[in-house]
Image 1 (tube, one colour):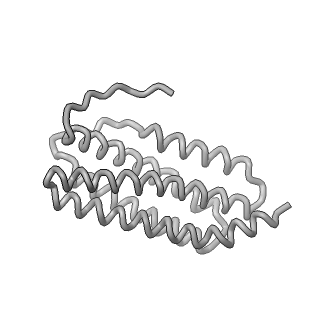
Image 2 (tube, rainbow, N blue to C red; image 1 turned 90 degrees about the vertical axis):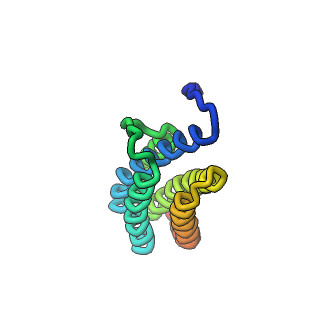
Length: 168
């Protein structure tokens, strides 16, 4: 794996860089989430994913608010998120049974959530250290949303994975 060189001289530059990466991750999630919703058959899963899509749109608005107004958002992609989404799409394409598809969607969604939990937690800490307390509060709200979604997905996973195991 080749890492892109990025010269970050201080925490503020790293904070801004990581904000942009998270912004693009959220953008990518907002594009794949409708497919995950349409592919799922479990009503509770659809409900959680649909709610999270709305949260994702809110998170994008918050990140836009946090990012410096004068800083250009060069359209890009978050490679980590792109890899997670590609993995999800490949697994979905191979699933022939609905219960298995739901289990795949839950697993993929939780991977996305765990990335976001780590990113929002890190950025909240950076914002606090940099004295950006209002930004830290916005990031903390998003972190709480991500943790709640992960918890709801875990609850659904118990029954969904059992149904997937019974599929032969």
